[in-house]
Image (cartoon, rainbow, N blue to C red; front, side, top):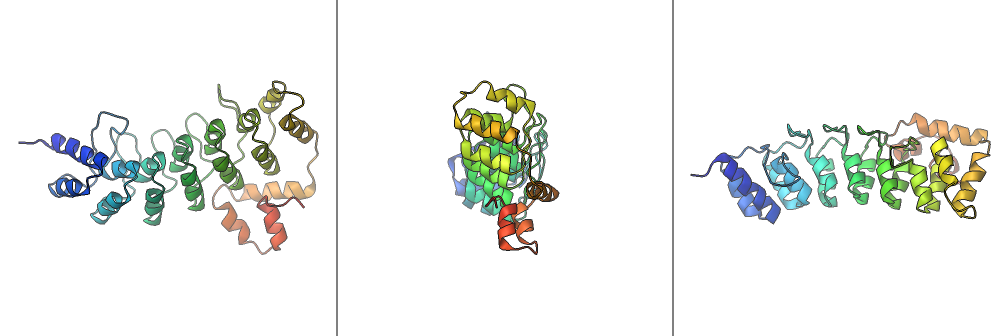
Length: 275
């Protein structure tokens, strides 16, 4: 006679294989909708729904939600909900579906990481955009004091960097062995995002300036950073930085577009124009 643990292993294998009929049969046999599955890999401790979410199987996730699996249930091991796991996988449709069902986009796991941070760590750039649009808090940092911007910049994920900067994330702290977001962008030659960060009010730190000395003197990014380091911001630029900071890292675009201001000024606040 199969034990409950045996059935949980079978359920994990069915989810991994994408076998929806086997999943339905095993779930209906008595395994809890929020049961924690045990598997010999990095998914150890994930729930039934979280495992399906990580695999990116939208049909299976929809079945489990309809059958009563809790969207925001956190597993007892890593304290992650299904959206955390979906953000770590590659299933954009699953992320979108869970958000539409009311998944907590700012839930924190044991390591103080939100779904947005996991999406950035795992280079899931589309998920970064979806989560930001859904109201993810872009200033969240993990236990290493890394924000989503740090991880996106480390990886050189230009699209995610632009999304996060536009959403208000301009953290400039250096991480041991990794440097600052701007330093990583400068080292990789991502001039567009270096300029975007500086327009967004990023404060050059001593760590950033130290990076300049290690780059070629005739490089464009060095020229840009040197010029910026000697500029005195205008009152208009200071007001933009202060206004964007007042949004506090949630729904930047929606909140700015709702202001009773001329479209040209809204575009300036959204970093779409410089005059």
